[in-house]
Image (cartoon, rainbow, N blue to C red):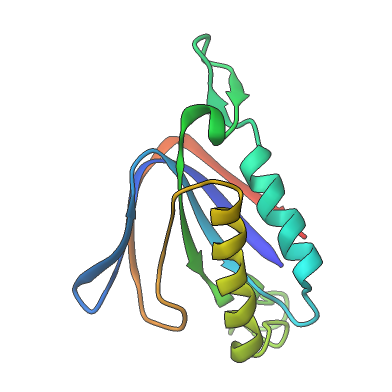
Length: 145
């Protein structure tokens, strides 16, 4: 399981010219589900993301968590995070989970984040999406489970 976490001023995701998810200040999370990933790993990852102290305090130091800044989440499924780029020039997605299993875990992530008390917006699993955001910092981090 792989995630890219971006601290954003705002973010939105559009499918077929319609905005399906939008947030203000918070985190844009790209989530890639791999073969063998478990609910236990997902629960840890979601909890960890929400506890990360990556928002600036009054002194400009990254010291505040998502809850302390009353931030929101935009979660976007992204199987391309599972790409293997080591061999040849064409990405291999052999490590990506089966789409049915990946969607189940992706949907569970939305519930976990909401259960932790955060406003959660999301993209559409399996759709071609346009993601727009204003990165704050820029702050972009990787977290694997």
